Length: 85
Image (cartoon, rainbow, N blue to C red):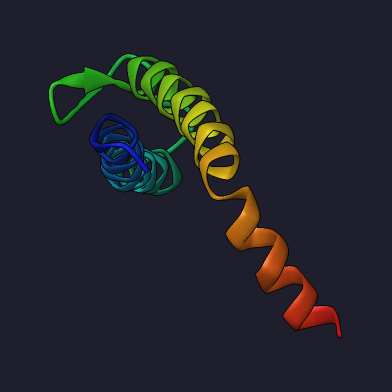
């Protein structure tokens, strides 16, 4: 395994961690704020802006998850065999 691949794996893992935290925070804010207050600002952004960023974080997290699965497919295959055997 080359150092370039290791760096890319580390970047993907860290991006998943950061995006997961951001996704959790934005989802929590959207869950806790009332639905009828779209124009009020919550932590410097409107509810619509929070929804927009929540969607962006979700798409980015999904993309990084696919890359993560690509890099760790062999390990996932071994774990699946152990789990289902």
